[in-house]
Amino acid sequence: MADNGDWVPGGLDTSKPSGARVYDYLLGGGHNFDADRVAGGRVISVLPQARKIAASNRAFMRRAVRFMIGQGVTRFLDLGSGIPTVGNVHEIARHVDPSARVVYVDFEEVAVAHSLLMLRDDPLSDVVQADLTEPDRVLGAEPVRRLLDDGEPVGLLMVAVHHFVPDAKDPAGLVARYAERMPPGSLVAISHLTGDHDPEEMEQVRQTMANSPSPMYFRPYDEVMALFASLDVVEPGVVDAPSWHPEDGLHDLELATVRGVYAGVGRVRSR
Image 1: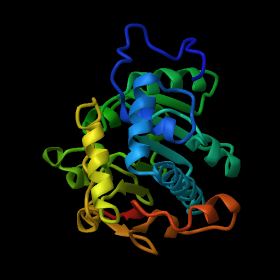
Image 2: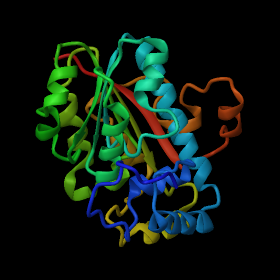
Image 3: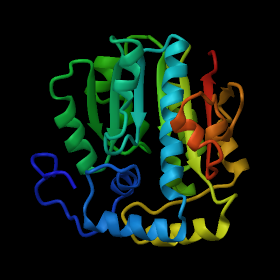
Image 4: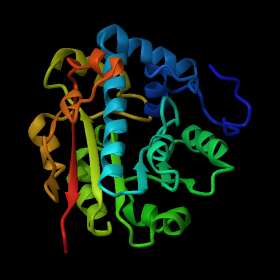
């Protein structure tokens, strides 16, 4: 793990794993603790392809950002952004458009602390500590208003976050509440873990995370499709992550057959 330095908030309880830090571990990042690595090891033991599934999801996020840039989007709101590791949204976007603006949102203290450290000299990016299930709080935050609230289209990223949202929080309703506040021309990227392909293994993963601060809720295809009900889905629809706008390159070719994540992009409807 990376040297703690000033990315670990004082008083943080590191004895329990968090979804963001377990994901960081699966991606090969260095911002995780013993509890996260133990939980990650358990996930891998019951789901040997867990690292590839995580990488496949991250690759979808990269392609979605590039697609959005190609559609003229240069403002991004990344909900449940997690630990900023292995290719961040602002890095991907700025490779194409150096003027791209990004606001990261997460409730996890380590994710926010490290994002603030990483972005302290970046005037076009910022971070908000908030729960994505509170759209009014997120969209009313000063960094969001300062960097994104100028009427330009927004790329809303809800990548690998809804499987942390219980049914009681109405995941599809949350998408609709965000979408109705987005400017014309905005796009929404969503990915979601599923147990459709490996039900027994994914159930064991769910049990592994059940007593953590980040319990998980895997959903079947029709429930993932319901998240897009308020959007116009762009081609090729909601598909296994590697099948969404696949591109050449060894990294993606290695992940071409990985299943376990449904992904898609929707266009905000005109009002």
